[in-house]
Length: 195
View (cartoon, rainbow, N blue to C red):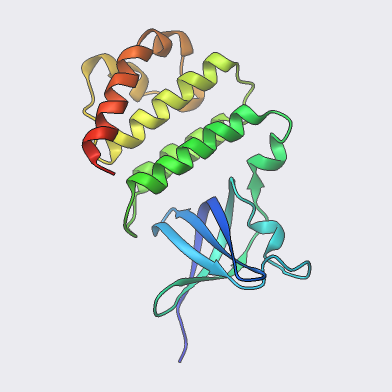
């Protein structure tokens, strides 16, 4: 019996050890949405997948859908936030919080292209020179866009100016002036989601 092989661009949101050398990866895929995939022997020094599946990275993977689980069978070299920002942790923490939000809010395997594009844009924006204020603004806008895209946050008229601009070009001063209102709306959306 042959299995269909899926080639997908994805973000490695997190990983967890399983048995001796195996790991389960939370992947947010451009085409498949949020999936959990198992990789056998990935923790062994001889594994071909080892360097390509770092958490908090963007990579291209090959997957096979088994009876019950996805299996990771290949991966290309990744773009790793961990490698880029190991001495500057705020970018890592921001992306980890966004990853955790996605794992919390998306509960089934289905395409969420809009959310993927927001995460991709945020990922690219993190490679720019960012101040602490810019990172705060970036996170507020990314979280509110994700929640809006998933249908949990209503887009108010006052938020439209920074919803229609690239995350790389957001003006932190304008967003930080709305910080309190944004946080209230984000918290309300999270509470009302019951997730």
